[in-house]
Length: 185
Image 1 (cartoon, rainbow, N blue to C red):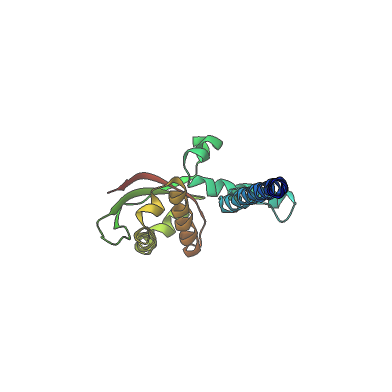
Image 2: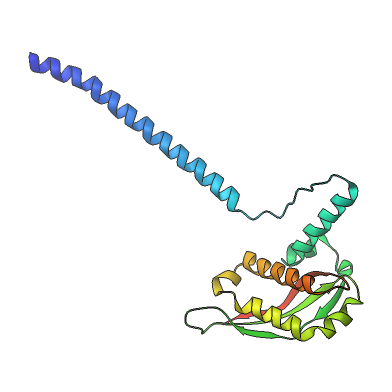
């Protein structure tokens, strides 16, 4: 009889401990899912910028900035603007650069056109063409295949080129870049 009492008492304790273990596992899984969702949200690249000033001029500049950033992505930018709204295009010669890699066997061949805010800027770009080409070659050759093979990678390269070139010019601003050829081999 003593043995029967021990088994009856141990069964409720086993049920309690297994229920407690199940609750702990469920709570841990929920926490992992929440943490994963927060990390994914933080890592996603957002195009929306919150204007710091609510004046109409600040909102207009913010909208122009978003349009400029989207210009590098291609199709989404064209769907928002008509082709007649695109500024003056300044074609650049083809760039052929080795991509950064361990084996050194990958290269990129890219042709692009710059969208200018005014036609006067093309004269400054003509005079600074060798320096501009050098900067673009340095940017492109510093990238790996993985960095430029995705849509986001191409967008980041475009934004980087626009930022560098805009820092070098004084007569206007480059609004965006359009790749007319982009071959990786």
